Length: 261
Ligand SMILES: Nc1ncnc2c1ncn2[C@@H]1O[C@H](COP(=O)(O)OP(=O)(O)OP(=O)(O)O)[C@@H](O)[C@H]1O
Ligand SMILES: [Mg+2]
Image 1: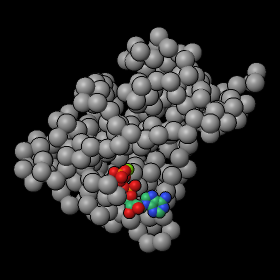
Image 2: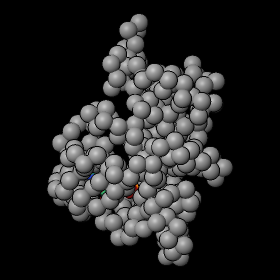
Image 3: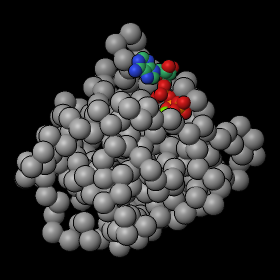
Image 4: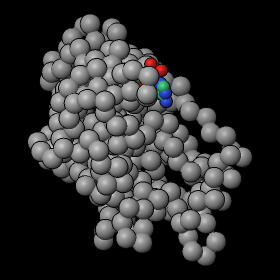
């Protein structure tokens, strides 16, 4: 067992958004979290990665309680979060975005071979390391966001709506990639509104409504539930970045990341 949530309640300071969530993700499995807009998927992702501290309940990682650990320490222990909307630094190069993903390692260097392994999975990135991330297509940006998440050699990857705003063909490519990561031994928590295709690659699934898990089961069982197919086939809208703000942010970050700026 890698991750176990026991009766987690969490929110943003004015009451709970999540109510007594119990959910686990074992080594080498994909668990898909299905829910409509505002159901609490991103809040749960943030609670696991440490951006939000739970009000009550327990987060266990390899059996150890990590409720109070900061995000960077959780990342060091193997929990990586690829947030909704990619959150890339649009004005920075591919190589710089990747370097930020390994920022928790000494001197910002990923483990030996990690860069190479990630780039082997993303040939399109390997060819364009010096290109500015903001010029990439939505699918390429999502791949870069996932590759950045892999830079810290995680054991659990939390993917928050990776299919958001992508064409059906690109959604297929991203899901295929997620399946290959699972086959390499990674555990994956996949938050999605795109229920049918996300369940198709999953081992297990859970449905979240109004901050509560209302149904859990094998992905196959959920996939064949007519109720779920009918209720959870929403398609998201692409996130828009403000180019000028992205460029300013990139300049400030470069100064922090690279000595020669
Ligand atoms: N920063 C915040 N401050 C206060 N409330 C928030 C904040 N972010 C989200 N919420 C509220 O928490 C609830 C759950 O939101 P959350 O973003 O977790 O949903 P979601 O399932 O990820 O939705 P979506 O599919 O739109 O991304 C919503 O009622 C939302 O308004
Ligand atoms: Mg969300």
